[in-house]
Image (tube, rainbow, N blue to C red):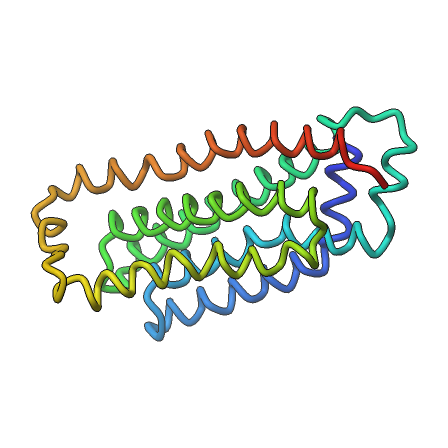
Length: 218
């Protein structure tokens, strides 16, 4: 499986370099006070979590799926390598976001408290995991091009739902004022559960992908 992991890292290295430079540039803007650090960490998380999904495009261009089935590799190894790659990206994003938040707080360069920065990072990690939980099985099943519309749906539908709730909710008698009454530590604890829930769903997503790879015809 380590060889398959290195394959994903090597074929994605150009995208990874671009995203790393991109994140460093946004971090510099946060240091200058142009952006809040919460925006930088959230945006970086969502963008980098797309790398495992985009890796399917490289596999499709190289006809990797057909070649992989000629190798003595069980489906759990073929699918597991992509999920392991996802976990590596997740660790990199978490480390980058944490270091950025701590540095901004230590240097007192922003108005956002450290606890809010950590909460934003945890929430974005949960959102990014939810995206890959859904998209990885779809990419194994449909391929990257046919799965792309689902990617837009997975990303846009929650944002549209929240926007409608904030905009139309008060007219319908729905209010989010109760959120302001939740203690900060309790809110952080709830947000911290989001990545854990995403990881749990990642395990289920992996089992689904293994079944798809096992039954897929090339």
